[in-house]
Amino acid sequence: MVHIVFQHADVDALAASFALDENLRGDIFEIKDDYAVGPITGLYETGGREAREAWWEEVLSGGDYDGHVQTGEVNDESTVHEIRERLSAGTEENAWIWIAPNPHDVSGYYWLSNQLKEYAGQVSVMLLSNLPFINEKGQIFYPNNLFEIPPREFVKARKLARTLTAADFELDTDEWRKLAREEKQVRILEGSKKLLQYDADYFDKELLKQITPDWQKAAKVISHFLHKGKHTTGDAYLLWRLKKLVADQQVDAQGELKTMKDFEVKLPVGNKAISEGNKEDLTD
Image 1: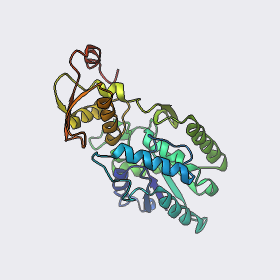
Image 2: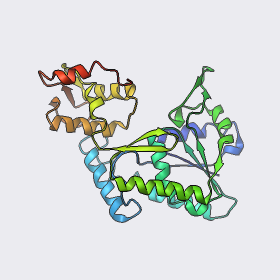
Image 3: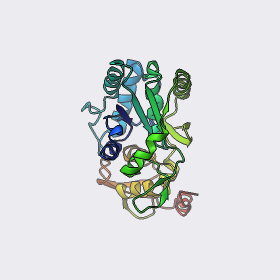
Image 4: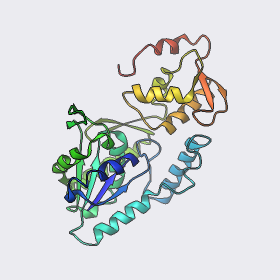
């Protein structure tokens, strides 16, 4: 049994369920890159992969994850190679792909699907979109991430497994190719597995709403965005966009523009338009 997840916190959450159901036990593989942001054109070719690595180096440069690309920690091609080897070992081996309703998971699935299409019949998906679960307090909730689900609920979720056919893989591969041709940089989940794409500055307007006329640490601004935003992304991407707003003189800054704790930001004096925007709730 092979399990595939798309966020690091998902690994421990899923593994905790194995003690409750031995039929779930298996090796967990994590697809580490966040394919919901950044360039995705030509990722199955050397040039496309190198372009994406260069983009991530720019985004992470000087920030909290500076040098992360150079460490080689994110090597999804190698991970997929291992998964393919396992599935090629025999038709009795199978893989379960866990997809929570967020753009990170769905984008990662689309990137992965083209590389597993020859294993139709051995690969199943658990698409958790709009499905109710019971939290630790016994309340019904709709998780956006796999790691929010209690271990006992994974045991129930396994009943949702649906085996992918050759036709499924073909449709999903075509969808990823279509997204790649649009050459956008931000992918937002519209519902189920439907992704909409936008330019790199998609989050800027909502990020500006968290900035006030008083100095605040960049970390505080980003934290507020992540807690209030209807659509969010990783803090590294938001830090990069915040620095872009400073460079474009839409935001004042003091301190070194490095990590989230190294500098503060505020609205420029007299920027009433943005100040008024701060009164709006992000969830409106």
